[in-house]
Image 1 (tube, rainbow, N blue to C red):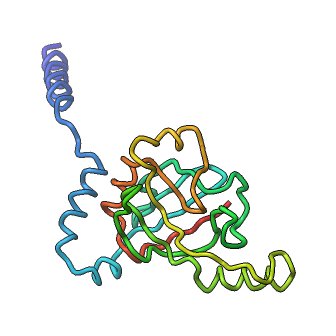
Image 2 (cartoon, rainbow, N blue to C red; image 1 turned 180 degrees about the horizontal axis):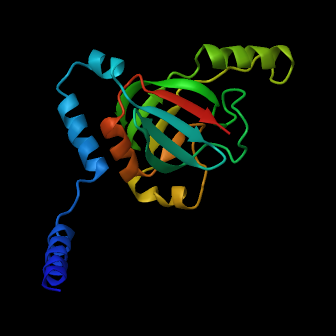
Length: 194
């Protein structure tokens, strides 16, 4: 009986001791990794970049994946309420396809911005095919300047209420855009799908 009692006390103290030890958060570990990686050259960052982004228009979500799988999810909004693929400049639709982050910059209005390589070969091909089929006017232009960027700091509510407001870009909350911007390097693959 004494052995059971001692084992029970030992187990209780062990559980009590370990309940006060906080395990390291995966996100914190990742941020420490990113801080260490920043000292390497930008060429190394792109070559060894473990990230890719999938933006699902129907779910209003931007998901980040790394070498281990799913890493983070951010709610986002788009341009037009018409969730179809972008046809031409000025239609306010968000393009679908495979892109990459071309450039990181801080925009004067909405802060952190990841500029995508739109239009790329895939989007130009779709645009030309649609124009040849008469789906868009002959004098239409494809457009450019599509990015993943923040809302203005005081307008994060647009994401909470699924208020599509951009000219075709993908927008996430200002506070979350700063987080995404902190670890996504130029060259990161991005897929936008419906």
